[in-house]
Length: 227
View 1 (cartoon, rainbow, N blue to C red):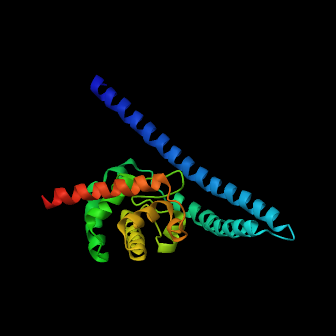
View 2: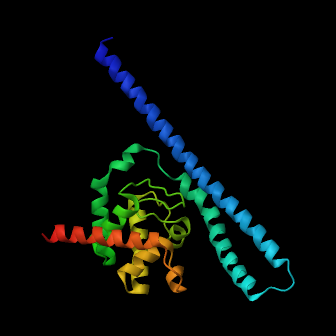
View 3: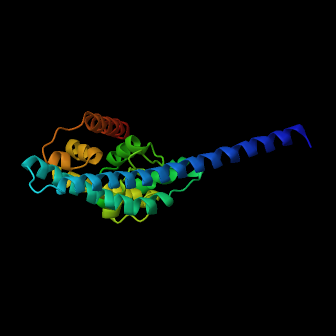
C-alpha cells in the first residue's frame, strides 16, 4: 500500500472517531439536561409539600407558594417535552455548516411575518452563531434557541429543523414586539422571559448585554446592506 493511501486511511479513521465521540457527547448533554429537569421538579415538589403542610400561611409564604406552583408547571412541561425534542437532535457535523441554506429561510420567513430579516439575523447570530445544533445548558435549542416549553407553545415539532426553528422563533419575537412595542424590551423578554418586565422586576445584567449586542449586530447589518 502506498504511504499516501495509508495516511488517508489514518486521517479518515481519526475523523470517524472525532465525529462519533462528538455525537456521544451531544447525546450525554441531552440526557443530562432531561435528568436535571426531573431532579429540579422533584426538589420543587418536595418544597411545595413542606410549604403546604402548615395550617396557616403568611402572606410571604403564599407568594412563594404561587411562584413555586408556576415554576412547577413550567418544569412539568419541560420534563414532558425535553426527551422528545432532545432525542430529535441530529449528530451530523455537516448540519453545523449549512449557512447557505439558512439565509433563504430567514428571508422567506421574515417576509412572511413582516419582520426585518436583518433583525432576525442579528438574533440568530447572537443566540447560536448559525449553529443548527446549538444546545444551551438551560436547554434552549437550535438557531433561535427555543426553550422546550416555548417550542411546545409555538407548535414547533422539530426545533432542530432550521425552517421550523426560524418560523417559531420569528413568531415568538413578533409576539414580544407586539406586546412591548419596543425592540429593546422584546429582546430582554426573549432572553430572560417576559414575566420579568410584566411584573416590573429588575432586569438581569446578562439580558441587558444580550439586547445591546443584538441591536449592535442589527445596526451593523443595516449599515452594510444600505451601503
